[in-house]
Image (tube, rainbow, N blue to C red; front, side, top):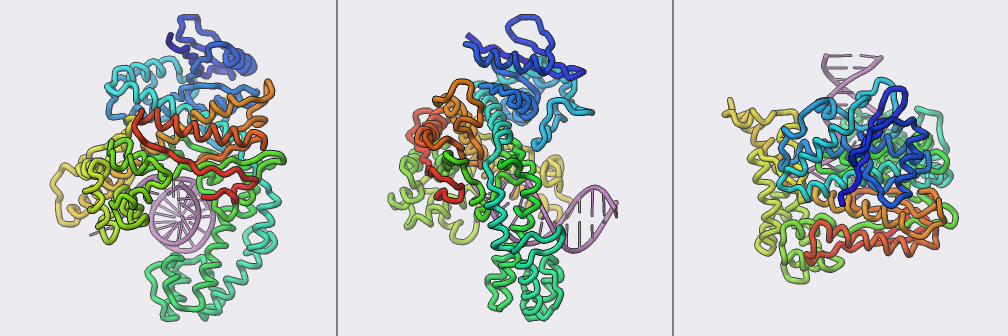
Length: 557
DNA sequence: TAACCATGCGCC
DNA sequence: AGGGCGCATGGTTA
């Protein structure tokens, strides 16, 4: 029996159109009735797939009403995937309002609301778009994989909405103490904290440039040059090679200035409330399918502030990350049995070294990363050549992806996500120009540079993108497993084990301490399930390192 | 003045 | 000749 799809569209005056694909008559509800309708179905024997334009907006509203849904189809997100999927006949996605669906951007992830004034999504009918998408998938030669991809994307969108809704537990007092220890007491807005001011003064003195502003690159470069320190840039990595007393305080200044700017007191004011850090997530926000973040910087929480992420009393954080996700995914998608054998154990790089493919673990890592990123020169380039002989299918796959990119051809992930066309991001040169003969040496060189850059991108795209697909399957399954853990009847999402962070290949679950072991078991089981979903019975492991901790900073990496 | 770019650093 | 992001700053241009 096929599943029931219930399509929801917005109507004027904050009402909602409900249209089921079981032949029943469509009808309208107000928001209170909608929450009750959804809750009623989620509690019933057949949980529908809820079809809507943007999960961030609909699920936030439902969560506020105490309703959690099991499955959905995010039309905006899935349309974006299908529009670039090489296996999809694009004419099947044309039709009424298609252009408006194409232009539809994500709801503001930091403040999702179902109804907003002057909304471009207003009156877009979910039924028509859903039918188009279903037809496009069904007609594709990769219908099964695409359907899995869309389901995973949509589940990811549910996770993202729940992450924002629940928030990461965050201790403002711990964070403020940490800032005070390093920077001094909170200064008035726009002035430097004491420790930063002292370091700036010290740098100025050591460079004989009183009043120097170390934040100004031209000022700093000029002052360094006057001291005979000629550097091409002022990156910490470059400065460290200099032998001069200013290096240490200058690097310390830069580090603390960065802490202040990105995760200082103003960040706390903006993003932490009621003991929760609520960031905006954008599922599928990057072209490879990885998530992006939208306010708050949830995907780049510096180690320095992680001590402030503390579980509630009697609760724990279960932190889990996958070891070497992308090399494992590469082994699986290429069917490289030698690399897959190395991916059976906990340490893929060490296993490569143990078989004699390379001398040391670090050589294995350097060579594999070089192959996935497109390193050509030096040590890394030489190792890539060696490893290509040992793992021809895996290294051949990324090499072929790079060649396709250099020819200007898009590539696809395991589940069928297509890369954006060449030149789309850079804007430097659109694809048509590549077919025209270059007018002069300069434009020839420019074309060449663009092709190579796109080749490095497509090389990485197939691996990073398939890695993102594995991770989506992982968190989608984990989300359901966590919900299925025993809890008191009617317990809300945040009264049970729930996800509070997802960072590409790592998750954090906030759980009552007594359930931490169950959570750990489910996190591992979900990883194994994701591997089977993508790679079937291929002999391939996705080992996790899992820590049960009170503070995020204690998690071993 | 606002919008944009370049730089540098953080995360994966 | 190393992939993907976000964010803040300073400095430039429209």
